[in-house]
Image (cartoon, rainbow, N blue to C red; front, side, top):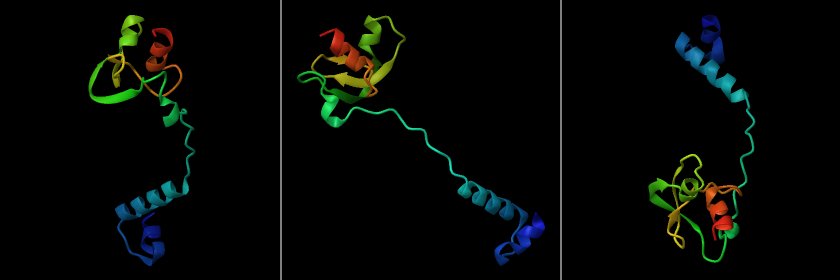
Length: 105
């Protein structure tokens, strides 16, 4: 490998540099496919019913829907100002924020 390093692009380099260059080239030529992520709700559809919007707060609290349904405890920053409750929210159809507004209102 060191012999290759000496002649590599006409640049005389140390073994460590040759390994780093080789690793960078191998990594650059390798392409990995990204898995598609989950689809989030569009900004227009974030309003669930009348004036209920998920608002992100700096403080975290226990999800009230999980507490009421005895589900696994989840702490969240998402808050419904209309209901005055912290509700776990990820942007998909089955999260606590949406389930609470479907079943509890």
